[in-house]
Length: 135
Image: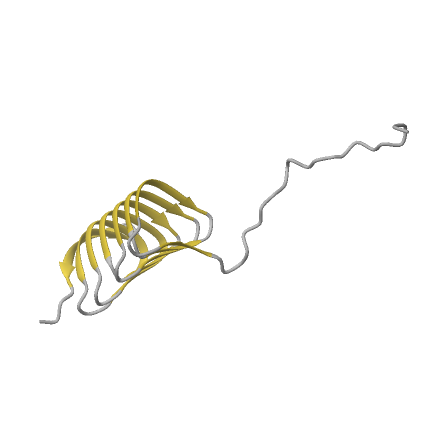
């Protein structure tokens, strides 16, 4: 009766693959204090106080705010950022953005109207920040 009973096998070493084009999100009205590590893109429309290490692109939406350290491949900032950001490729600062702190990036795009008060290092050169305001 019990002779042919097979032992059920369980595979505990499953790997989770991240779908291409997936984006993490911190929605408006949410607040996180601590460390976030993201293996794919992340969009911040709420508030993050702490650090963010992202293998992809970081988007700080118009209602988003980060106070702390960010390390990422690309970044688009529409909201507020205060702290240190290290972008290995392109940092895109939109017209309604406000950035204060230290910036390290390979490429930089600052649209007119953005507040960009930073110490900036690009390709080994340090440039003092300015307010890109057309008033």
